[in-house]
Image (tube, rainbow, N blue to C red; front, side, top):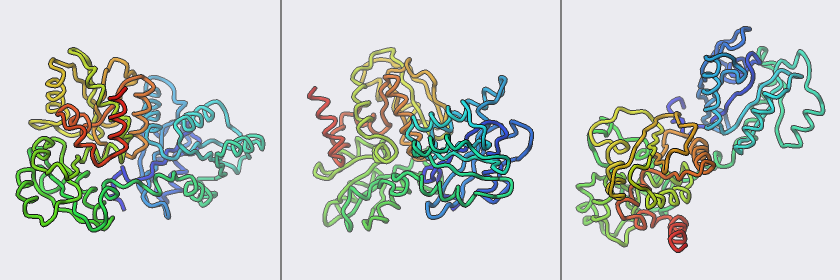
Length: 410
């Protein structure tokens, strides 16, 4: 359970002012002293994460945040870190002492509702007083669940657990498939896995492992080969595979070695659908045609790693895009949860597959790009477009392919 990747966990954010009992609530929920508890306001300085199992939901990640009313220069930095948590919150818990609902709580609730994230209001320290009946009725009318607790004594925690279970988004309970829905049960998927300098020693990367598991979960089977052995492997089969999935860096060779009748795509494009919005990424890739020499492009990676040699984000994608444009572009890279507040200087954002993230954070970034009027696409989608094999790479996804063709006709 502790080794379940964050991307598979329901992210539950705890928000509220300083010293309202968020840390006590987290400790009571997890039955552990996860966060430091003190009467001094502002004890929690950075978000504290605690993974656990919350049945029947499954793996979840609680995130205890610093108070959003923190003051001073350091306080503002803490508030900025807290705001980043909104980006990946699947269910938000707004904590306030009973009877002290005010502008801060309204702002947090409004932020969650604006992002489409279900919210729960916890009136903590309810032994000192209850909330106004009119407030409870207003929240109920807005379909916001309310719970009264005394976190320091563990009171109301069972009610909060039940509220979390009921507020879990349907897309988390019935998570979309990565590849299994593209292949009938009993059919073969060939996974092409290059082993290069950036391949982790002794193991596969997360998207490859998750794809293998997803194929097995849907009663299909897979064969894993390196790109150099793909042609020979396909020739040995008695019948062609239902799908070939490759690392995006090997697109051209794999496309050349895979018969045209066999659908082919990449791991990154699978995650464009699983973690993000495939149609949005398709439209974003078409913005490559509108790039001009000197334009700024943002490369965004969900996880941090030390680039080695021909790094996909820092070397290969910039090279392919500049070859396509026919001139020099200006590239900026960000990693992890860092993302510019102002996106307008960029003509295009190219994002990794986000395998380490929950879907909420990726959708939040897509929404921010849409609001800023900046196109966003995904590593695999951008690579396929710049290499001229776009329709081939989208062949397993009829809706995305039609989005592309319809946009071309306009």
